[in-house]
Image (cartoon, rainbow, N blue to C red; front, side):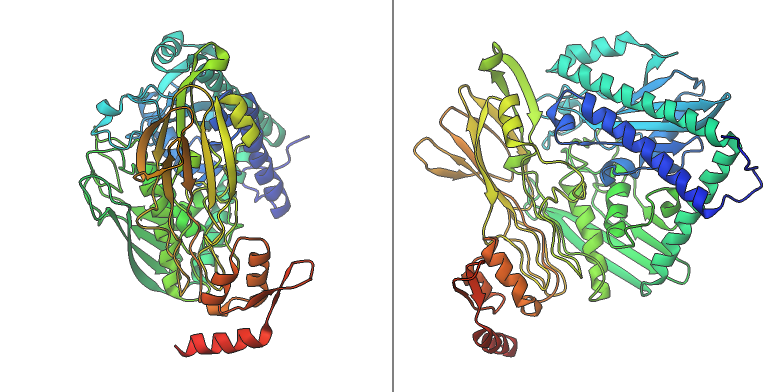
Length: 597
């Protein structure tokens, strides 16, 4: 195709859309490459990874279906790459997992590849993936009670070159293979990430050859400007307001009232701006709960974007209109070295998504969201041990069979396959059968937990209950759960989630309630039973359509008793295909009585 677009010519909307879809397609091809080539279940099955394209000028350009916690701050990593390596050249690749220089947390290894076209650095492609193991002091990528990065123990690479002129720097590979518990598995994931980035590099060069480098530059400028305009339009539909909102992570040792989180959101529709101020938060903690700069930005912006037009592209144009104010050395802000940010991507990070999106519900009915199900409970635990089926080979991996429920919105119920707030429903759930193939454990049951929905005019999605244990040898289980003491909240009259719980089940069936954040050893014959959080409800349950209540009871997501006592809907058994029907007269009387009180 002959390029006919000059730098001074505005690209027409049709071509702009085609080019935008082309770069999103490149991100999707990178993602599919990493998904299919990776070896660990955390990447290949659960899809705990994201890819993105950043411009040579460090502006986020394309993210496709990347996890919000991973991708919004990609430009922070590319900026550190440029600062540390002024000699960038074609064939370079860098490993970056440093949370003090723009990464999310040490478990997220990012491969950065600068893309050159005719000698000019046009783009950087980013392939980020959560690792099964990073050499931490304990067999998990989450070390919540590490006093500092030294006690955490994992390998940290501050944007280290791993390829030069397309050739591997073997020193780095040897270092990782020596320290990581599953070296072959890690190396497979490492090669998959490099392969993903190189696919992006090739496709972007082809993209520039097809349309011409100057036309691509015009596209980049116009696409980011277009995104900014779309963001302005969405903000102008909101009322002018200053919202102060607070929440807390569950109590932990030393903080019996939990980890407090505060935010102030300024909405200026006249200027088309939203400012999220997170500076009023406590100093960094001597543990791994600190939320680094990337995660503070990613998660707070994600909460706001969840409440705006979903068709707004997720690129640098958003950042021109939605900004975040942070403080150095704060638990939510810029983590100061050597404080640990081991679980920055979840826990307090999840609370930050919930805090910002539920804050917007204060604007009134039709705005904001309830809080989504938090807590990486039993179904999200990191399991490790020795596999008797493979000659005692060491295994370690994170499970993704949990079932936190999604938050209710002003127009819809929460969705069932939500996962956790920072992932926004984009992480895959593991196949139970594949979990049992990959690990020497038995999944006894995974089911919806009846009556766990948070009621509302629109209800939160229910949580799941699951039970599993080792087949033969002892298994270590690390559980960084939240939402047991302070479950997700409903908004505008919607109810809160009942809360998560985790139990260790003895051989005789007796149950021991575990703390939210726990590490236990299960012997053969013992089980772990976990109940995940539902999402919060939106609006009064007495305003819910009785037909929706009937459906939930028929699906066994709700109980007939709760339908009556909370929703004021009288459900009776009958011979219909659903097996239940609504007693309309009794429902009208009961709802009138409940409203009167």
